[in-house]
Image (cartoon, rainbow over all chains, first blue to last red):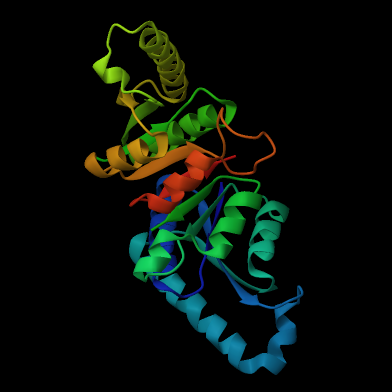
Length: 137
Length: 139
């Protein structure tokens, strides 16, 4: 099975990566780390040369995610992808187009009030994904 | 050894969730607790002889027996507990998941209640908001 974990570089995402990596290892699946640069329309991330800073930030988020995954599940096959577009739409589209069997996401913010709510991205992904979604908090 | 909490009301999506929890339990070497919550309007627990309660309990047992069969069909060596609870469904699920320190909750995207058109059931939505552990929503 192919498993996807989405990260925005925040704390809940880090936990989601940890859980997803462990699950991927146990189920002999491969893991892909996805970061979506927010943009109103879908873009090719290579167009983002003009957005040097955003690209750099995305790369840093993905690198950090790789480290977390390697720590949680040494030896696991992990790939990464940076996309650009409306975040939840891109997550759902890529998961379906590339045949992912499960999506792992974090649960929104870390403040007390935010804990009471799911993030809007998480909420959309649960609603529109074609496959099981695990919300990690 | 850890354990997963798998919630079922006997609906199509719930039974898919039971299946998913069994698969994950097999990979992880975990046990599974199958939970059905009887939604209490009055507290049936205080009226054990009430016919309404008896019917609901029979139905609960049927649902859990079917779920257990699903787990056994994935792997008969999975340690599987059955549990019936009473009360507001979502809060019972969350309470039990915290008390039993379950590793994750498995739940269907929608159950037997509510509008068919709805993409996410009210119970699932509430569990997602209040749970303390990872929640896997199956659709």
